Image (cartoon, rainbow, N blue to C red; front, side, top):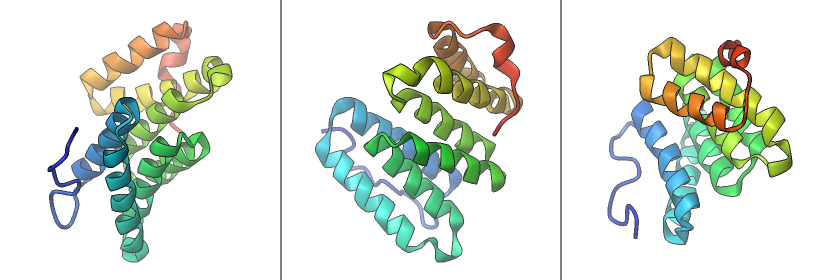
Length: 154
């Protein structure tokens, strides 16, 4: 079982890296069809949401985890907007990249390219080289035109 004994939020209070970890763990649970990890992540998201009164970041990460696990594209795009407004462009980029991955197959050539392009701009600006390469590869796989690579973030 993946991440069986690992704490999902290793520090109190959680740090931004913990939030990125939760998004990654949600992707792992989805890709591996790991129902136990999925359940733990949804419980963790609910815990974060309960503590969100004074911490909007908790609400955003809870929605991100939920959006990935339920394949809710609208929720992930909303998370990206919240993270952008809060000055967390890398967490916004992760949400946009996740939205592109879970979007319905018939929408992959339109919305997914737009979200990946926005994620790429954020990753590039932050100097996140590995993330930039991964998103460029995803854009090439979708046949995206080069001029899309540097559009503004949401």
